[in-house]
Image (tube, rainbow, N blue to C red; front, side, top):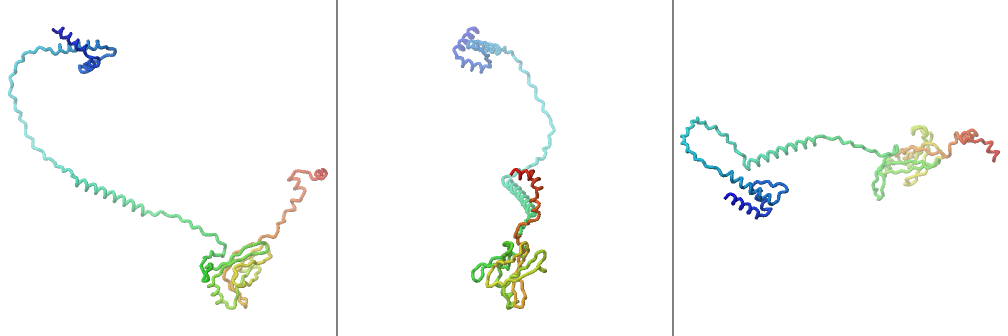
Length: 289
């Protein structure tokens, strides 16, 4: 009977496809080796099933029912219940409050830091650049006169060296200053006083001369005929008695030279200089020419 069953089992396995055999091998726990064909898998499965059935056939022996002994009751000392520590978990309201407190603390720290930084005073280095102005001459401020023309608010006079023989002066005087000075020195007229201050100051000039200014002219060309000399001018009021009242003083100027300085040019005409400079013999040049 066993042989008949084994043959039937083998036929059933042979009727299956290779894929179905592989699946049954997986289910039964059979490991398929490389190079196995369908017949090898069928053989292995049939053999495996027969071995499993042999193992399962076990003769049942009669087991005597053992008399149950009554279980002994264990007497254990009753432990006193320990007091439970009840910890309340914070609800939603508690968590919101805690978050708000943390946020408040953080904001306080930030505000403290900002205040500390703001309290630190950083020194700012400011460099003041003063305008370059000629000596004794102020930079005037332009204002509009009652007549509608732009005039300077401050009194000034400026002197320029034109050439070795001429100098040029221009000025601007306020009407208020002229009126106040005319009150102080009546019967006076506008005058430009020219000083030769070569190697000295205005307190002790080499010489000076006056020029009467007619009308309301604001500039004057002055003929000095003295090259390489220093000059300075003042504008003011001169009375008939010869008293001079200064309104403004100009800068110092130096007139240029009227020729070329000839000192030391004789050395360039010597034969020795030509010989050393050009390394030639002048007599040979004369004979050859």
